[in-house]
Image 1 (cartoon, rainbow, N blue to C red):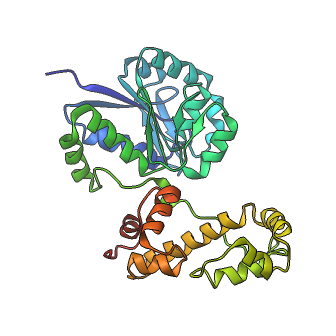
Image 2: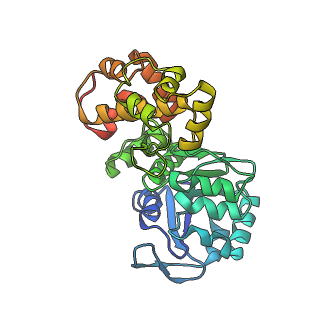
Image 3: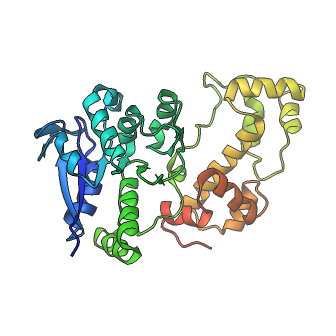
Length: 322
């Protein structure tokens, strides 16, 4: 019988408990004879977590030298990722030895600080994606997916997406049946549909009286009550009593997007709400939100939210789909 695969999860100060729990559950409690699981810190001893309770690290960074796979969970204070040059050095050395390295949530900042994500497509929690991209411009950040497998380097989105990545690793190492067994014990889907884009809040609607309402607000207010009708930029400009060119310029200044982009966001927002709160058929929702037909709505959901209307309804309402 082959030796178990050694998985070391590196817990740094302010580690997020749920992010740490995913590999602990999948590779530790449910790993069986396949995996040998260990928690490591900067040094052996107690490590402060994001919520107060301390966790005992069984070993220090030397544990990474014995690992077959390394998992770096997210940090509550991920701005401190660059504060651990010894961690960066240990991860670089492990990577050079061909060790598989995974991050969960904002653990991606630790890998990025070590230079391990340069030139790679990666993900992290959607709320931290923009900062990761800004801080590490050589990294291609995709905020829409649950996880990214780049071979020896893997990254996942936040919290529950860590479970998706860990199950992906089990599936890769031992096959779909083994991953399904682990998923069954954990009471989660072996493979989730869509990505984290469906969980990202759409931009807030600008309302009358807000600081950014501006000169185009009357046109936006009118559009929100006529989303089921075809609406052109000329229609909106006429409502605002402006030329098309002036309207487009002012609209972008006030909302940060073009009129067409804004209309699409509002239609998607209403469609999401109807899917969450009503049993209306998808075809009816498509008409009511100005998409015309279910095929068009599905196309926009796929491009913008990386899921389907049916899957979205199943995830966020529990109602049966039609």
